[in-house]
Image (cartoon, rainbow, N blue to C red; front, top):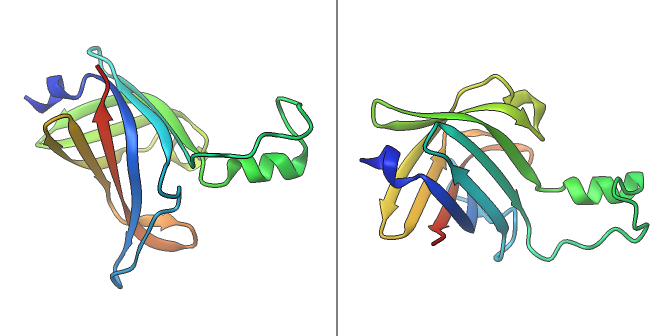
Length: 141
């Protein structure tokens, strides 16, 4: 069953945004970094970012306003409960870098092939236009 198969930690392999006009972009570049964890008791957390992000020159954990803007670019993180219902995976963020997701239900289409999992989003506004996200994850042992 898929609900049991996803429990564990997954490493991000790729992120694509697919637009209705056929365009495909990689907003986090060709080497994104991320982890996605599902627990057996129904919780999940995700963190995603472009690989090779520049360090904050200020050395301040909060950074300067400019460093914060640069650090936030294409950064995604959220955590909360998840459920498997009617053949679909749902995330229920309780905390999120993008505050609009808190308290919402995020539907994810799922495909499992070997040690890889592909999660696809419904179309959403991302990067100034509407597109669906397609994220590939690899199970960590």
